[in-house]
Amino acid sequence: MTSALDAIGGESALRALVDAFYDRMESDPAVHALHRLHFRGHGLAHTRQAQFEFLCGFLGGRAYYRERVGHMDLREIHAHVPIRAGDAELWLATFDAALAECGMTGEVVDKVRTTLRRAAQMLVNDVPDWRVDADRRAAEAS
Image (tube, rainbow, N blue to C red):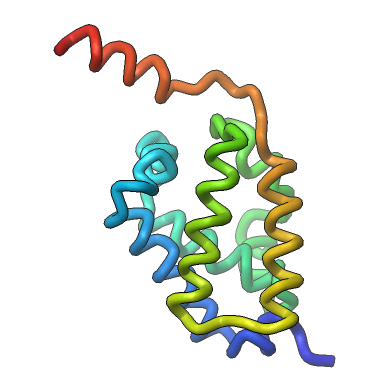
């Protein structure tokens, strides 16, 4: 049986997709809110690799992330990250743009999008959003 990873072109195609996604995050001002969420973490270089590892297993390939971390629990992974509905939608739109940039279309990609939409919506939380406080302090300072 062919995995979703195989259907999109294997690990090399997934690596290109992840790179396209994070390149957008680093360069597109419209995606800055997502980029900021990584300022308090390990940074985007670490996140690029973790995303590749996670998606590889998520799409039916080798479970690199699980091998390294011991689980693939999205809620646990993101438990410390303030994720609002707008963040989830922005993540999904950016991922869609990366899919388009990489020329990934078809039934398997549509199923992946549907699954990622459910996952992103599940991650919306009420963790205190440090971005709001940082923005308020910046406004008060100017």
